[in-house]
Image 1 (tube, rainbow, N blue to C red):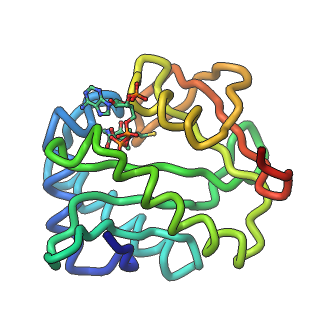
Image 2: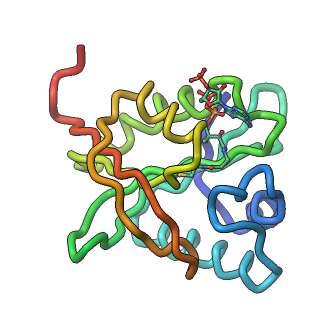
Length: 165
Ligand SMILES: CC(C)(COP(=O)(O)OP(=O)(O)OC[C@H]1O[C@@H](n2cnc3c(N)ncnc32)[C@H](O)[C@@H]1OP(=O)(O)O)[C@@H](O)C(=O)NCCC(=O)NCCS
C-alpha cells in the first residue's frame, strides 16, 4: 500500500466516497454533484497551500481506495492540524487507515506539525476506535459543522513531540 498526493484525477474517488452511505453515513450523509465538486476543490486548494491530502493506493493497482489527510482548520478560534480518513467500504476494517497513518506521520512531522486533532462524530464507532489505537487521547465532546451540517463530535488529540510508549 502506498500514498500518493491528492490530484485532479481524484475527483472520481471523491465522488465515489461522497455518494456512499457506508463512507459518509457518520459525516452528515451523501451529497450531490455540487457538494462533490466543493469537497474536491477544497482538497485541491488545501494541497496548493501545503496541506497533506493523500490517496491510499493498494499494492498491485493504481486505483485509490480512500483518502487520508492532515489539514489546517480553525476550531473554536484556534488554528489546529486535523486528521481525517475515509475508505470505500470494501477496504474498511482491514487496518488500512492505521498503515496509511504510519506513512503520513513522518511527512507531517517533517512539515512541523506538533499536535494532531481529530473530530469524528461521537456515534462513529470505527473512527473513535482507530484513533484510540493510534494513541490519540479523547478530551471534550463538541458541536462542529461538517460540510455545512451540524455534528456532535468527539475531540481526540495526539502530541507528536511526546515520547510514545
Ligand atoms: C474510520 C475509518 C477511516 C477507519 O479505518 P479502518 O482502516 O477501517 O480502521 P481499522 O481497520 O483499524 O478499524 C477500526 C475499528 O473499526 C472497526 N470497523 C472499521 N470499519 C468498520 C465497518 N465498516 N463496520 C464495522 N466495524 C468497522 C474495525 O473492526 C476496528 O474495530 P476494533 O478496533 O475493535 O478491531 C474507516 O472505517 C472509514 O473510512 N470509515 C468511513 C468514513 C469515516 O467515518 N471516516 C472518519 C471521519 S473522521
